[in-house]
Image (cartoon, rainbow, N blue to C red):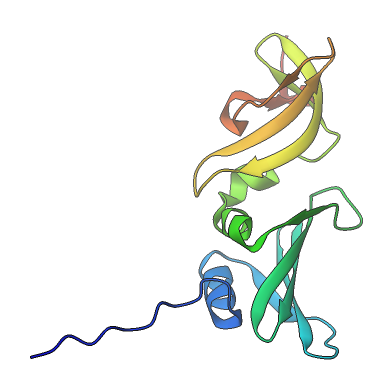
Length: 147
């Protein structure tokens, strides 16, 4: 008996992206298409990911963060999975430009970076000029902190 080898699935093709997005709670709509390219628009809570496809394969993805009117970051197809699978509540708990407190330091959120299905980091520029990358579980919005 011989063993048949199956070809590897492309994790960045249209059907794999839509399946992963559905499983992770993203709403999917189709964007405009032109000359062999098309767009998928994925939305969840205040996040939006615009995925550009050429011949059914992802070649770019633009991220629109909560609190931003337009996409403000472009990620490669290899990083897009982190945003699709990112922890829903932790990703949506903070916005770019929001004042936060981490321990005894306060500052502004400059970026939101999901690492996997559970961990989400913030890039925070503290009032003293330093930059930190605390997990969302260690940070509170400034108005939530009681003195």
